[in-house]
Figure 1 (cartoon, one colour):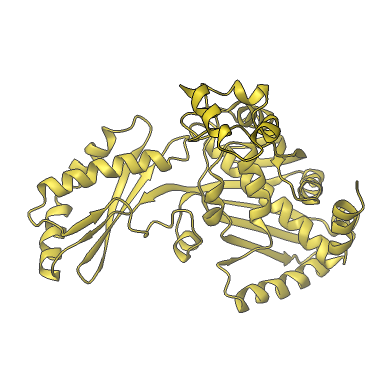
Figure 2 (cartoon, rainbow, N blue to C red):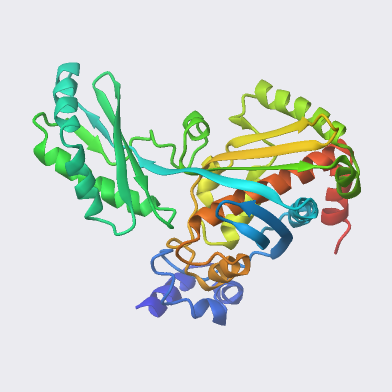
Length: 379
C-alpha cells in the first residue's frame, strides 16, 4: 500500500530518518489520496516560499477586476519586482488584456517507404476528417479535435492535430485522443506505415520554438497599457523616454543573440505563478516565448504591450486540485471550471507588470542595487 511504499523508499535514502521530517511532515502525509495521479514514488513535498503581488487591475475580456497574484519562488527580488509593476498598472487604471486564440496540438509521425505511399495515405486521410474528429471526441468530454493538418518531409508524414481543451491545460487529454486516432489510422490506412509515433516532436511541446512564437500552443494572449510619464517617474524612478531607449537596445540585443521573440524575463513570473497554481512548470519553455514592445506616445507617455503566444494553462486538471495550489487559484478568484481564459489573461498582465518593473530598474540603474538589497543584505 501507499504507506509501506513510502516507508520502503525512505529506508533506501541515506540519512532518511533525519531528512524525512523536512519532506514528509503531517500535512504531506495527508495528501496520500490526492497525489497518486500527480507523482510516482512519493516521498513527501517540498515547501516553496510564496509571496503575493498586487493588487493588479486587469480590464480584460475574461479577467476583469482587481487581482492578488500568488508567486512561489526562491529568488529574491522576484515578488517585489512583479508587485511594483502590478501597483503601477493599477495606479494607471489597469491594463487591457485579450485572449486571442486557443489551440493545443499533438503531432504524430508516420514513416512510409516512398513518396508514392505518402500520396496514397494523404488522399485517404483527407476523406476521413470527420471520422477522426468523432474518434477523438469519444475519449474526452471537454476536448475537441478542431483540425488535422499534414506536413511532409520525404517519406515522413507529420500529422498536426489541433484541439480545443476547455478549462484544462490539456496535455494528457490531447495525447489520449491522438493515440485513439493513430490506432484507427494504423488499422484502416490502405498503406501501412513502417513506423508510427504518437508525438514526433513537431508540436513544440515543452520547448522554445519558432512555431510557438508564430502560431499558438495553448492560449495566445496580449496585454497593453499606456502609462503617463509622471507615473513612470513616481513608481520607477525613471522616464518613459529612458525606458523606450533601453527597450531599443534590449530588443537589438535579443536580435543579435537570436532569441525567440524579444522580452526581458517572462520565465520569472510565469514559473512562479505556475508553481503556485498547479500548472505544468515545464511548459514555461514555450510559454516564455513572446514579445514585449515599448513606444513613446506623441504626448511623451509610455505605451507598453506584451504578447504571449503559447500559454499552456488551465484551472482544472493537472496539479490544480492539490490543496495549496487550489488555495492559490482561489486567492486570484479563478479556481475550477470556467476560468481558464481569465487565468491566461492574468498571466499576460503579470508578464506586463514584470517587464515594466525590470526595464524600469535597468533604465534607472537600480537593477544591481535591488538584488543586493533583497538577496544579500537580509538575514
